[in-house]
Image (cartoon, rainbow, N blue to C red; front, side, top):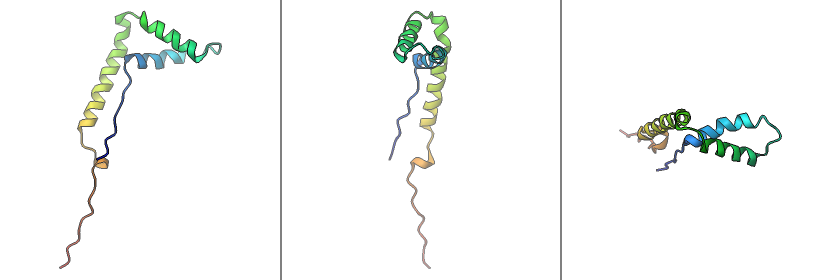
Length: 86
């Protein structure tokens, strides 16, 4: 059986993805500068402003968990049907 591990972004990663896009518009910033700014912004972000990212994380987590619980036909080995000679 071949199982694929599914990963999902945590709340910080979701925030980083969105906030980094805004910062990348400033061509004077290096990737390291952007990462540092994102981390500092997250560190001091009040809980009420973190909440949308936490909710999105939970929603994604639940969705992927449900998908993992459902059987997937492509993951199951299909046996060819045997023809019976009469």
